[in-house]
Length: 139
Image (cartoon, rainbow, N blue to C red; front, top):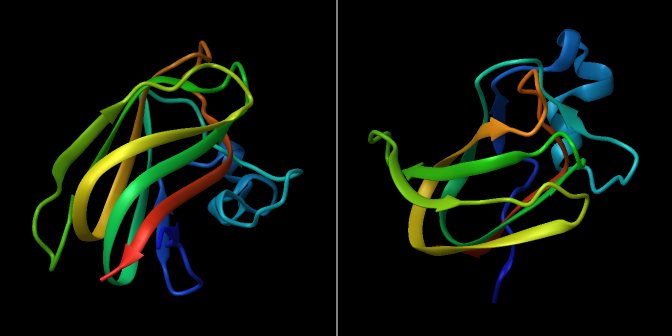
């Protein structure tokens, strides 16, 4: 059965936070299920989110809700297990809108994921994400 794999024990890191204001725009807002909060990156060529899971997982889908005008035209998902180097799992191509977008992921068993956002629609390279969900199964 497919369900959200991010749990309180999942460790997350992000490339940047707008004006270093983690209280208002920090990474915790990616997973809080609150429609009013978001992660807002600072400027840059690419932005990323790293997730370290407490156990091995089998990913099947990635769901992302951007703020229109602050999305990414291209992204890729990388994964690793047991401290190995990251390897590419899949490329994805988001639309520039406010909808929750779902991207299928070829079956991959990992304990770490890196989601990289490239070619931002914002002139300064900022990305705004309201929801980030990793769906699949615990192994």
